[in-house]
Length: 328
Image 1 (cartoon, rainbow, N blue to C red):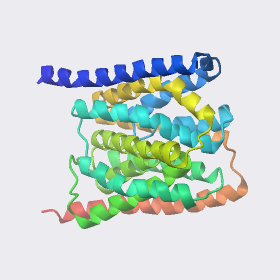
Image 2: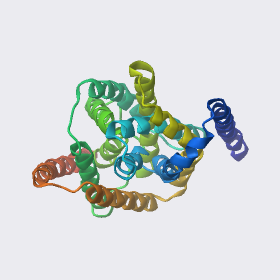
Image 3: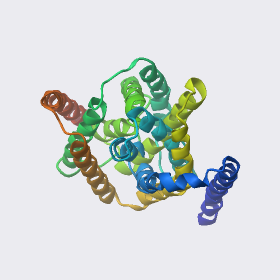
């Protein structure tokens, strides 16, 4: 069994090596080696960003978006597009690693979430206009509230995590479709979202083990990012040339560090993974509210969001426990 698994993992190294060789050839043909003089901080940022993308339900864009917009003064739209571009490589390589290593993934959840997430992404790209910084503030605020419920769900509510989800139930399918569509809309604005939203629903509403929910969301976000890449590079076109340079400077980083994150996720115990995610959410919340000072009007929006999000998350746990109580 171990020998068979090693043989399968060799496929990852073949793919990664092929991408690396193609990247080197492209860099020579484009004569772009000089771009590292300006882009090396972005490459360095994606070392951490891609590792987090492979290891947790926070996509690489969760790191790239705030850092790019505020530290590197990159336009939010370009930061979002870059998130799709780099995740389409890094998180799909992590997904390949997950598949080859036979890490548990709820593949039906991935399929259903993407079935709704891709239309959500396209609808969001075409019609959704939300003024900055509300999308990032609300998403980060949601992650912060979720962190509190994650603690409650793990250490204050009795019960063992589930390994499977009954996707034949029509209500469950409807919830996953709604989550996927909303995740696609969110990703259309900030470059991530479907991964965290699916993770929240799987964890709070259905009590799925975080070690299974996490790789499920990594695969989902990676494949949605491929759709985002195709949409911007193929359908819409007109991508800022700087984005291509940022992307090329980061490709050889993410194809190795995102799978490394996936491996770390599989190696961690459940509580270790939860603490790691809580730590990352704390950093995201702190950095976002430090980088984006909150105005009086935004406080009102966040206060209303807190009430609605809290009721939603509490309702997820409540209905899950009612369902558990009905099981003889």
